[in-house]
Length: 224
Ligand SMILES: [Zn+2]
Image 1 (cartoon, helix red, strand yellow):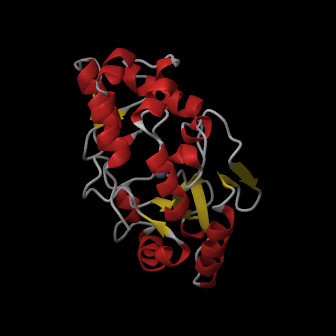
Image 2: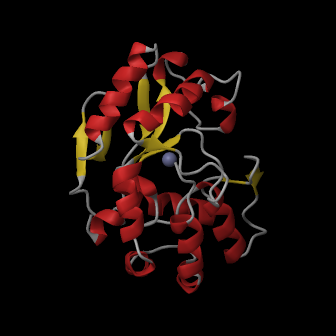
Image 3: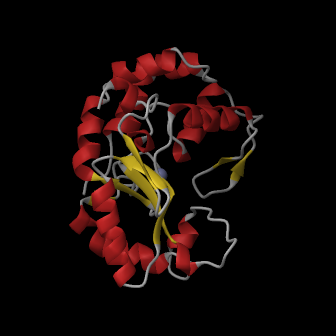
């Protein structure tokens, strides 16, 4: 992937999949559809609640959280009041749950947030909360199936709360071969360039701490 692809500023590496509707790296389409077929045989309707996400979308999420237009959540998922926080604290709080624009693994098209569409009633609004994937939640059975089967198709969970500073996300899966190439290519300088030209709230603090943020949120992931 080139720098624009690595940071989600272009989508030349992405294919639009009509069914189930999602957008994935061209190398990830076949493995994802194979995994979906296997899941279907076991009674699941495996779909991506989120797949490729571009830089401008991630920038909008970041700026909405930084400014308080969108709720900021603490580690246990409770809402934090943004007014009392300085820039540094806002950055830390956002990064618990959302990536820095340019540093989201969703930019690569290798990462998907997975749900089982037949496990919830029509009109159900997917939250992507730990409770939905825990025993008793609608996606608990899928979480168990994925833990057993996703590795066969090349997918793993990069955010398990072990090494990664991102909160554990039981729904987030990554196609290891392509994603690992991208992770190694996304050097701090590539990220710095992408951010330098963007209207990012808190940009000065982010740029000043970029090496540290890159190490914590790009470099440190949980391995297969
Ligand atoms: Zn995700």
